[in-house]
Image 1: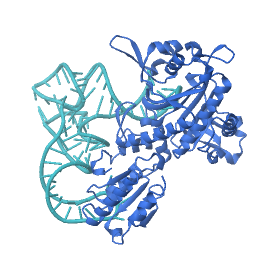
Image 2: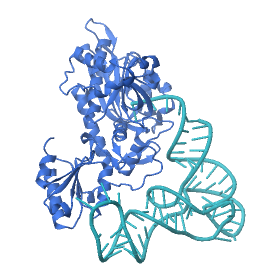
Image 3: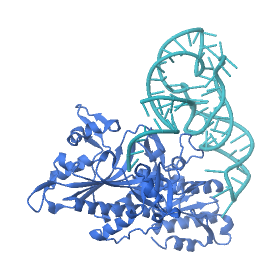
Image 4: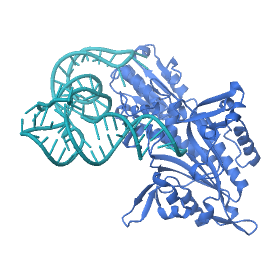
Length: 442
RNA sequence: CGGGGUGUAGCGCAGUCUGGUAGCGCAUCUGCUUUGGGAGCAGAGGGUCGCGGGUUCAAAUCCUGCCGCCCCGACCA
């Protein structure tokens, strides 16, 4: 992409409403625009990141055996009356009326709807286990939206729902998501720690929140420091290996880790001094097992092997990709801007032509742009007629992992400069070497 | 929902107390000079001062009603 023809409305100054760093940087880097309290438009750069995050989430869900579908944002009130949540949910649910004065709502979550879909088709235990998920916009009319997309009213959520014949099966489904979540967050360069959680208004009795540590996090967390060095389950993990998966989950839940709501001072005191860690964290995922809470009242039943009909055991599993992006920025930035982990970066490489109009820098830039693009790299080519300082600032702000600086100075020696955004390391290389370096692995 | 703020050009702000018909910096456009960490000079464009009502010869400014947005606390992917 040529920057001169892209839509990247970066801001030099910080809008005054932005309090936390991720919100400031997302606004400044032209990723989002606020349209109302807690409601944001995703501009091209923000959307690119969102799509990358979604792709990773999707890959790991699929790997674990979950199946994607797509449910609507608008739901019928009647559906929610079946579970009793229409009245229970309160003012956080946005209630609307259509032209026939039918009562509708903008979905804050989809347990009811997925249960309705399930009961419409599934009759036998032989069709279990089943895990269906979608990535869809949600609306929760928060009393006080804040911190940009970290706590917005409209937000994107990946929500998965598992169906099993009994509790043992449901626990295995839960463990699959547990492992999938560990992998998902690790792939985005995050250290996410599963913490035993309160089940909240969704109900149930087995639940973990996945928390990433960041000084600006909203919740206070306490955990054993060894979690930071734990090895992430590999890509070839066998998700059908019941005991193997249980072993992984047991290992990841053996040490102390809790949010302030679930904090147990005595248990925390038992953690060795040098391993006791209290910090702030951001919740980026939440998984629940809630048994027959919805299947029972809504009649989602299957025939068991014994010829007995029984309500299915369910769980639900959420990740907020929009919040996740803010969390990644909270965890990875410096005073100049965002530092994207390569897996979710909006572009792989930025080419900075430091002297547009100079035949040498133009030719080298164009050639590099062409070759990297042909090799499948996503390149942002700063071909604007701007001064070098502005280009450095822009590239650092939007946080592209690799920058290639092409100016007359180094080009005189037949070299360009390859800069790593995260470390700041620079290296003088020929154009050919830059191409082979940046296309070496993918 | 309680408490505190705020609304003037795309962004950041001054002007409001003391009424006289709107200004600064950045950004934008034109020209020239510049070109390795956000340049200089010269010129130009851009605002129903959040919305409605009122007071007044005259309202960004005073009175009044409403709305939007932000921050702090109790709740949440």
